[in-house]
Length: 352
Image (cartoon, rainbow, N blue to C red):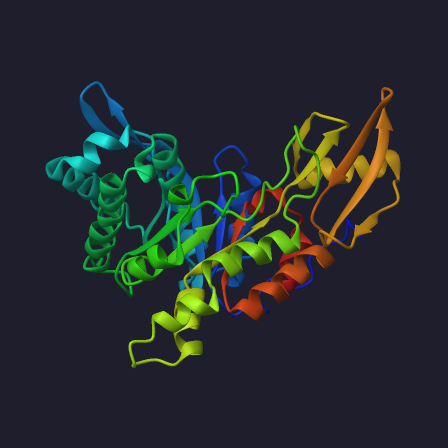
């Protein structure tokens, strides 16, 4: 079954927002985005970096932008194209200086206008955490204010040939018991930003690593992340007499894009190994003909094999593991963000 072709590339089975990432270093993703565009609402090519070059802030990455590909993906009017912009420049200076904050926003919005994008996916939270921004209450407020200003500017910018205003999706890390509370985004943060941000791309994958081999994204962990961000007790405080509890929760939930991985990991036990893509997974199946096991705790498939006297354990998505996560997303009324579609197998899209 792992090598069977796709069956359905047009009919959608998941009706909420679906954001698919593609990367320049894995060209298959570009082809998948074209082939299965009817299944996707948003596509985010990983193209841009904001860096400080000398004393100047510069936006790099336009050389990766492919206008012909964008035109082909947009056939029939969907999906929207929101390239990922990662803010790699030291954030303290541009967050604390109003002029530089405006410069960063102008760089991003101008690039969208010049290149005809539908908006941006912004990755900055993990960088802010690394620089200690989020532990400082004053700087944390400035970071949130920056997102409000960027979202407001994008939402009031309309391109002549596009149907709507520009959109902002913000990448967020999953809650982590190791992190400081201040390093984690909270429900209050999401509620505050919900009028400025169109989606929060929640990275609910990479639960395990080469140093701690195991499943990619145990379902109970994914569920705990959603529960942390969408607790009933907080939802009730957001009502203000205007919306009932479920409507308010749905408003916040509709902004969350639960992360799903289309890649797997081939671990060398007890430590070692790393990510594998779809074609590598198929090669392992052909070479070793292993027995697949279903881990009831994580709700993922895995198999074991031995090579050069070393024991390997491989976790890679299956239709069943993806299906139970789609059902989880539907139960929470959240959307999806997929990292990244070029790493998966074509028939994964049958159930999207």
